[in-house]
Structure formats: structure tokens, C-alpha cells
Length: 319
Image (cartoon, rainbow, N blue to C red; front, side):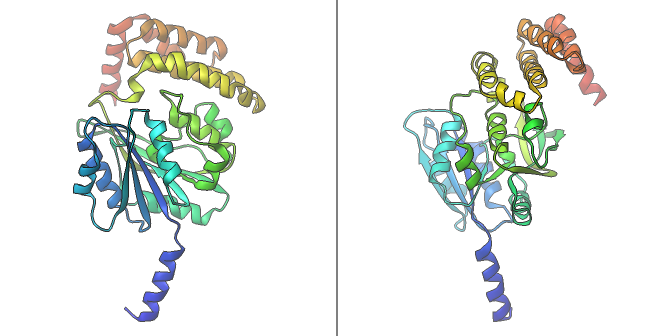
């Protein structure tokens, strides 16, 4: 390569923003190894990986040392006590050096072009503070659902009323936006990503890369989304407390409450809390009778386990 071309290329690399990848983990060494490999395989060149071990029974730093290539800049922090995923993320955020923060859960993986696609959007659109990408769900090694985000621009109203955005592993955000919006809420046992996205949306525009660049595993083990009672007893009332007024400001208070109830009905059904599913589905209908899905959930919940499982089998057969 011509020395002048090499110098120009080097200058271009220096101008690219550093991306800090925050990866919280707890006692899933095999999953963690795959997640780390997917970070090291990123096409985007300027990455640091901050792993936060949330007091795993066996420290995970040796696992990372075994799989991380020499060129990957990484460090591992460890909590003395288990504090939860958002506390681990916040530890990582507070010690990260990058202008852009990205997040990866230990049971997810990224396709190699994921960070490059997001950084390209940031560099092309100065007013965008959050970029999300699509997700491919995998169950037992087989691709199931593909979900792409449907938000752009000013996203607060859409997020309050159930728009598809994405889990933490899909999110990249400018550090300056985090400084304005605050850190993820450590009180929440569920819907942690959704809550933070709403808060971030109050301070910047969003953009979406409508391709599935995150691989998410389902069906193999307990995930935070499976814990219904904390969602019902902590997350749901906190959401109402934090965002009812904001929803009213955007003239979507009723839709916000109805969609929140619908989300609770979904969680109750999938975790076999049929009484709660009936209650939340009926509440969604009462608030907004136009939500057709709520009637389906109510019918499934009325029949209990047999009706719900039959409905799921039918859906899979039609898919």
C-alpha cells in the first residue's frame, strides 16, 4: 500500500468513535464465551469490551481470557454480591470510555456487521442518539421469529403505546444521551430495556436498522422475561407511576395503560397465571375495546392450560 494511502486510512480509523460494549453476566460461562466471540468478530474496528460479572459462583474472567483474541481490548469487573442485570450494566457504563455505548446480554450473539451498521447511522445523522437493530430468535438451534424495530425519529409516543424497539442487545446509544437521561433503573425486575428506551427517547431521536443483526436464544433456560410475579408486583406499578403523566402529555394515556395491561396478560399467559391473564386482558379491553389481541388472550385464559396450549400448537402449525 502507498504510504500516503496508509496514512489516510490511519487518519480515518482515528476519527471513528470508540464503542464500549457492556456485557453483564451471571453463571453462564458457555453462553458468555459465544457472546465474547461475537464481539471479537465485529467488523467495526474500535471496540472495547467491558464485562461485569454479577457475582457468579465461579469467577468468569478465565473464560474470557481463554476465548478473547489478543487484539480485543477487554476488561472484567466483578461484583461481590449479586445485584441484578441493570446494576451490572450501570457498573459497566460508569467505567466505559467510549463515545458510544452498546449492550450485549451473555445469552445473545451479534452478527459481525452489527456495530458497523449502527455507527454508520450515528455518523450520518447527528440528531440521532439511539440506534436499534432487528432480532432473530433461535429455539433449539432453529430460527423461529424475526423481529425488526418499527420506530424512527421522535419515538416517545410510539414506545409508550407498544412500538417494537428491541432488547438491550439491540441498543447502541451516544454517551451524552445517557448522561441526560440517567442510568437504567435498578429497581425493575423486568421490562428493563423498555423503560430505559422510553427515558432515552425524551432526549434524542431514534433510528432503526431494519435487519436482524442480533441472535437471541429462547426456550433453553429461565430468562428474566419468565418471572411473572415480580413483573406484576414491581414492574407494572412502577411503569404506571413513572410514565402515566408522560403518556398524558403525549395524549396517549389510555393507550399506554391498555398496552401495559396487554403486556401483562401476555406474560401471565406464557407463565400459566391464567387468573391474572384474564384480569389483565379484561382490563385492556375495558380501557381500549379496539385492541383485538386482548379478546384472543381473554379467550385463551378462560380455558386455562388446555386452551392455551392448544392455541400455541395451532399457531405453530400455521406458522
